[in-house]
Length: 436
Image (cartoon, rainbow, N blue to C red; front, side):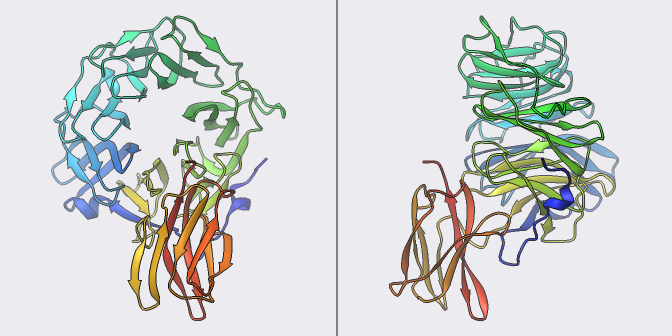
């Protein structure tokens, strides 16, 4: 069991892909005296959406806002949906390239069908706070609400919502696995409820239990359903440290809780579990987030390095674009400044770079079992480096200047390709490893 975040720290080398480029902040897109407070982030393909509050301190105004990106978080545009200052949005999902949904206080549901260019308010069945909302396609979805009903489903893109037969308090996390197939998690320690027939019949898991008996005082507030049968609960332990627990069989049994002494309060946000590399965080200790390279089985800390002067005190969202770009939201309430940043890399995912040392090409990219790299010179060491800066594969470039790497046993994720020359390290590009 990991007991102290400080013991997990792994330094980021100069050649690692460890610098977060700030692409949205008060200073990058707004006038002086204005800032963002950002609450939720979601990506599909190369498109990303975020929701939060735009704050204009000069004119003493604030309003709900949406931020949209079509290039994996490199650039963003802002859309004002025209909501009142008393309304708030807390959760957003980029369902596909065109459809986005967001939910918030007082049953507020907003929907875009044109990639975030325009938004409309949907008729809501509740006045409770929407804690979670999730669609498995453009039509079928579920939302979890802090009211006496709890769960609502739709099969017509949210035009109509219907309460379910499952009535239980604190059902605040939910997921759509397919039309009529849903899961819901009860705040605290479970259980997880599941249906395959739109809640006509219901199965449930045991409440959270682990072999160490380390359950007293642990509260699991959030549930990450995005890994199929691999599920991670996020919460806080009795000492108010961050806490995670993982199941690989849909919640029928759980591993040993992982405590992070240094993350004060719960683990508030985590990227999807549909890839090997997972990012997570909450209140930040010594400018570190936590990273897993095996879908949450083990974790290590990773130091935050920004491309400009910024100190983050809390992580509020993590996501990956389909090219493997990591995107994150951070905030510093003391400074009143929320930002969006993307993990910088030295080239695009399919790299063809001309330079004084030759012509580079990485293909196929993304790759599953093998990847070919054409360098144009030979004799130097070539490495694959993971998101933590660790060299996970090394070879000597052959005389042909072209090599084929077996990457079938590496965890899925994004890796930098670098070459060590006698007097410098040359970034060749990056390769995205997928499951096929």
